[in-house]
Image 1 (cartoon, rainbow, N blue to C red):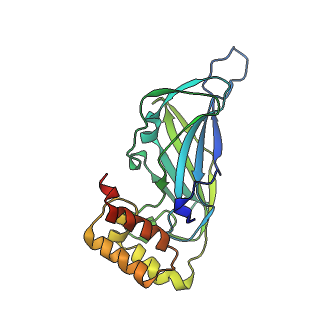
Image 2: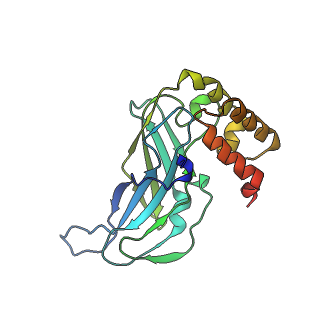
Image 3: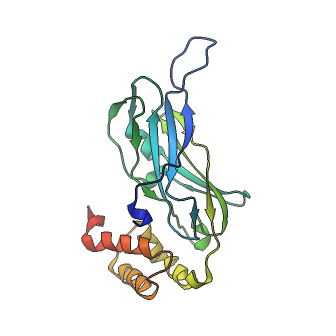
Length: 223
């Protein structure tokens, strides 16, 4: 099955959050862990990466948590050489996971999957716009107070194959990029994406473009 249809790979990185009470002089016991789960370790420039974030109870007791940590989430992408850093703010999720709940040992709250691509102005504002090693991590506020972060996950951006350059040029047009990132669905843009998959049916971006077009034509984006 295609990557965007499969269950996300469990390549999470745990960051243990010490929130339990403990006697003076004793080490705190970890109770919650923040996990980042990208669905691939290698992508091409401008190719989308799906990321889920989970908050897991790693203790042997129930822990009360709520989904309010989701709107505070931030994804940070930094090139390994330190030349650039891009942060996707938590408001990009636009989801709230509900009220307080009890997490049993081993249970977790999982965010909606998110396409980790980003554009402001110019191609260099795509998260994975240039080849190289990137470090991706997530952070959040727990209970609206305590800032926690995962350890960075390495993602390798491979050089763009020359025969995919024309398709990449269409993908990076402003209107197309916005629709591919679910920032807006417009009829004219849909026609542009249909042109892309018609002319380049086997390009790196075809699967994701077809997925977004399917959402558009089914009206799912209006839900």
